[in-house]
Image 1 (spheres, rainbow, N blue to C red):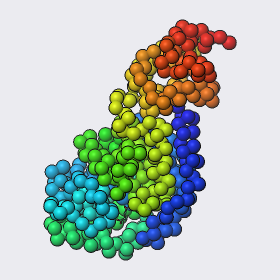
Image 2: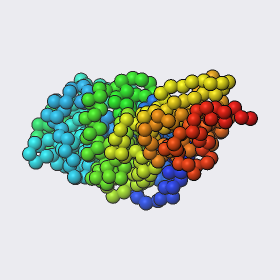
Image 3: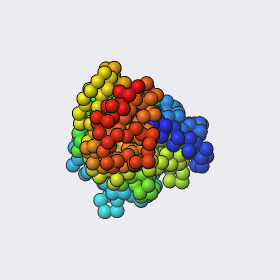
Image 4: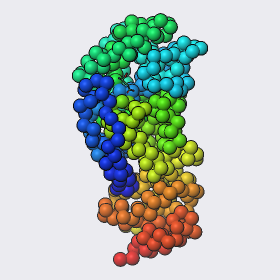
Length: 421
Ligand code: GLU
């Protein structure tokens, strides 16, 4: 239901807008000059519908959010065995730019820290750095559904301030992880960190992962489901620097953050989130970005462990009973994504339908957010010039005290109410 979901997003942004904690990354001068008050939040459903709030059109550098995408591309291009031979899948418990490899294997611990990300770049096929980077940029662009570009100033700065990453790359070469020239690999890595995105681009990239590797806006498959599953697994355990445990317990979605202030979060088969707010906390994650995701997860019931059953229950059948009156039969379990999609279809249905009757008799289970959305359906439909009624025979779905929701025990009674002048 578009106005209701939009309102959730706007309220979450307003709730955290005044939080001025954190500091903008300043390891390069270009990042220190961004506007710290920028705050954008975007949500893309896996059918490609997008919600945006705040500064969702402001571009910023993707930084470490590039890492899962390069990892996915490497997995897709050279296969899991070749990637696993060079990069592990264990959380490191160390800062992202630690100059270290796993004690036993002498490989980077995972692809979400710099060492693993630099190794992942080296696995992307390309005859030279230019070709390798073009492949990466094309891949990010098909994930985002538009042609992305590099912020040249940030790239130059990353390059001139890159001693630590140089130390990592040469260490990797000495351990036999990096076969190619470290400086050439680093050049591609610095460029990938400097790619410009908006929170809406990130939501689309996240939604592409949520959809198992198909960009929901363009329908283009970018990677296989197995590659996406592997990438999301590593994001889940390693994506939020050394604050991953708090993230998983309070938000509960595979995610990746970057020092540019962006975060992506992915709820498989349901939605992708992109958020932008530059001030970072001590562990390098956007402070308001994390807070916004915590609020979204709590209010919309998005923790992946709460989504235990089929959550895309939607419209089973529709019947037209009279001029402009359409009955929609819903079934299965109703959680946020299923309710959002069903109610959006009802809201946007054309063909002269101006009265919607939602038959909830076959709904098995419903969570709080889906219930609130059904209760708010009438108000939302009124805004687009439609009327809405619910059929809930034993008031299992809509509590009896919600008089404003126009709930009837049978379809016939709802139809009669719809016909009443
Ligand atoms: N360009 C940064 C680096 O490699 C990216 C860091 C990040 O976003 O975590 O140091």
